[in-house]
Image (tube, rainbow, N blue to C red):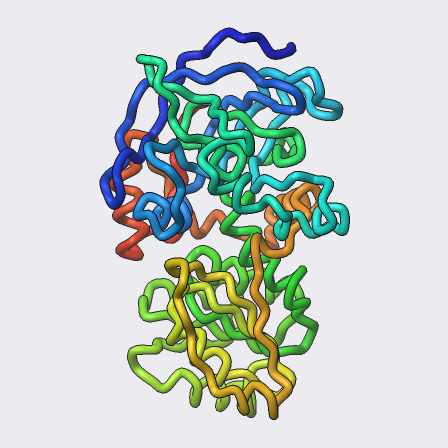
Length: 375
């Protein structure tokens, strides 16, 4: 099936104003062009990044259709699609051009056009694919998908084929939040067997990192958070120690557990004071990855000599340094083997309860909301 100019009626969740609730609206989407695929969205994760864009931490133009952890079934193909077929089950992930130097080197998360492709509110030429019933454009192409919708357009290179026997309604978060935490551990930090790892934050990203650290063979795995239920779950998922940072000095506790400081750490809260703690909690030659996203322009402070004299490192990480076509199927396989039980993080909500899902996520009641959209 190839693209036509015909517009398809869809239902979308729209952000129209800064810090205002999502609204469920009718809209229309064009058919796929070039190397695009049209995906019938079965479910999509709700990620912290959706909420900070709703609140305009990042300047995505409004009104916009967000959503960037979509999973569904390919329904139509553009004429340039080479490998995907109608009926394929896919997880939608971040957009990358595929041909710049970082992309060519296997580092699509650092694509030279990453911000434009994922946060620009349209294609790089400014065009959009979605319009309201009156023909007014809605900003889209969010993470090259805008999957808070019954149908989403993606490019072939960010629609990742997954096995038909995997639960497609569960897999969307592998496209961003889960691959960010797991990839940070496996791809970026390269956590080693027998090492110590500390996760500063036990949300969906932090707990994905905990599970990945267990897969990688770390023998001391510390989860740090302020929510007791998250810490209990962390123990179930592989943490050997948990720390409630409201109750003890985190740096002292990590140093005591590890015998001087962690070999590896991950900061997923986006809070600069937590990053500072993470740096202080590293052992000699330790490295901390940073995945938490605060407002643009946020500054952090740390003791330069502590970094220098201990040979410590700070590493910024986007999307877990993932090559999605390789890494997402690997995570699916680990899940199917029972070694990466990320289903314990999720709670399902229908699309029309997106604002409740957002509130529950912000309050910490739900770690990873998934919005069910179609069967």
